[in-house]
Length: 350
Image (cartoon, rainbow, N blue to C red; front, top):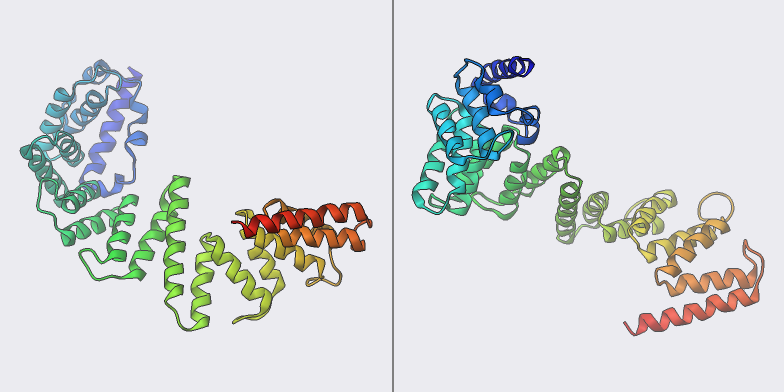
């Protein structure tokens, strides 16, 4: 009985929210139906309610075999009955089923028709599906302008993935003129809202590449450095090194060793031996603070040497040979000098 009460409460919620479908557009299928998974069809069918919302829930359960034996024909019949009553989520679900059965043009045309109807009711999911169809020419003539318009509607309605589509269209001038500002805006929006860490990292790399390309087109050094800083902020290691070098050398910017260290450290985290070596140099020469910090210097030089820096290995040898911040040890110095020569030969042969 508790399950039936829970179902009825949920159906009332659906009934109240369905007229404004955009309000529930941020739910994923998994989260939206999560609590329904333990239910069986008998739990639902015990209620006397025969609303489109109930048919929608049953349709989902039969389509994916949640609590019942999978029956796609029954699912489609339930979705269609609910959709014909004006239930927008059912229109989208029905369209998806027709699209999955894309072995015939008539199925794709049916999918397009139901997505179109749902889109007129404001469904962002339907707009996204229309965008996919217009982009691919699947079941409809390909049309980049209409695809972009559909993706923009989907993005406005809260479909996170639509921001990547819109960004790509503006970046590549598909269905519109190239507009890097708008492309970047949508990529950033996607990166802020998507939950997948892998997706976040991928779009951060994409943004870094865009900023690097823009920087390469700049003749003005100040503007170039501005875009390089943005690429560095999005994790591009080479940009981080260039920015760090600029701060260290005061090239095109006020010299600031603290900021140089910050950017070198970010590059070092990504495995840059050059950044590690430069951190060792800054600390060994006392470029920040009053005195040299030999313990930090040798730690960074050793990391750099382990990552293939011949210069760092030679510097360690010098520190042992001269007793800079470390007990003088000629044998240890010779070991590092020899290692430096080996690394130099390796670098020369590669």
